[in-house]
Length: 571
Image (cartoon, rainbow, N blue to C red; front, side):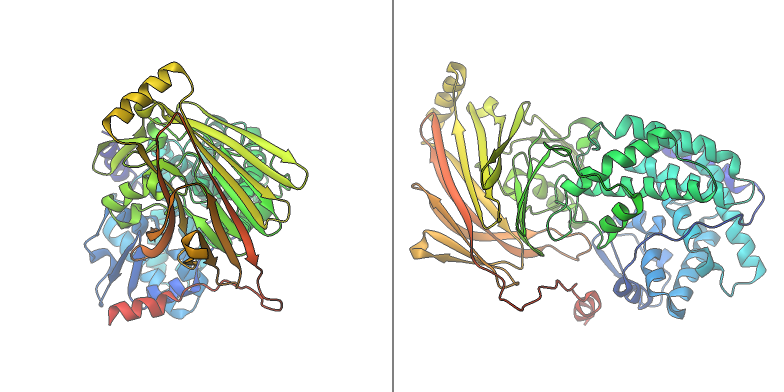
């Protein structure tokens, strides 16, 4: 029904002849990558994990390899990269692809006529109007202006049909941009500004979080709210109080979700974020407040010296917010300086449904799990899998002592199946050079013990694995006669992971699922495995920095060269 209504309103908007032209133009605020722009003008299109070599054909003639690819193409986010390149070839590519879109789909047809994609597209077209109009004849410029106005009229009718959350924020921000920039569209601004304020009140909670608990989602929402507020201010208007208050709440939360290298924690379908996007958004907001003590959007953050640790310490998203959620309760990530060290495998959504599902399971996270069981379960069909049956009770408490900080947290995700609760205690020294961990699996009450006994009767011990997934740049090797693991970072630092007790220590293959890549990256994981034989099982481990970055070495992370990588694949 929603798709049919979108089509009907798109066709209706395309038949109108509204006033056209620009009243004003917001300052472009999007960030692109020059290397990706070079890739695009060479005919290589990498979107949603799929590489397409145009080979002199139109980008709009390419059979879409996935729905995500189609959305990314019609949302025009790639224009940020062409604008970053900014030369004549980038201008020609941007103009050719845009005016061909108008010719093919400007009549209201095609997959790009959804509220969120229209919002994304309007923002890019308006931001880059100078680039798109440069050197064009009056006919093309006229068709560009008409299409902008027609898409604005469609958005004014259909923004409320966008899914709550990021899609609706995209639609409303696009409508504000268009309403303030285009002739005759100003009457839609108040409606959009009020709708944005209402979404902020409903979807941004008191702690500055969103229902998906996806840090990258939060950054995208924050960025859109900043853009909308600045665009309103440039026209002499103020953002609504709920809109401004949401920006105030989100900024400190994002600071708490940022690792020491500047990237976001990668939980619940989110990635690190586009380089520079978080810093720009925080600077643009003007909000300098730090996060209050306690959890930030359900995450605990420890830091000392140049080391940061972030733990997922709250129940996972459920219901409609859980379609990209992960069974990651109590999982951690650790970064030292500019180098991610212990990570989650990440979101496999760009690599197909199998990788998407695998990346959401507990074994794809740095946490203790019972073998063959995730702390939360996935139900549904195809790509529409939502999380269910996860921990109902998750508790977390900060630890503050002289010379260290820490968190103790627990969940009941294995209570129903095995009668076991999982408690994780982690402490970090104030200089960040030492991390101590303790994992406990315990059945406490009589009913829990009875469930444990029943589970134990089915097998000889309840097998479990404590996993530490490593970033692909970390080199791991067994040390001290196989009782420890040395972790060598590209910065020159060396960390040593040790444990206490009678458990098996192995280094096994892993993957790092990174957005913008053609395929998963090979990585390693450290696995401590054993079996629970009693009502309480405890595993103690430590992670210590054994060697610093050499004096005089400036650790600079350089981006991979996507052109060289893809040219190799092309050959």
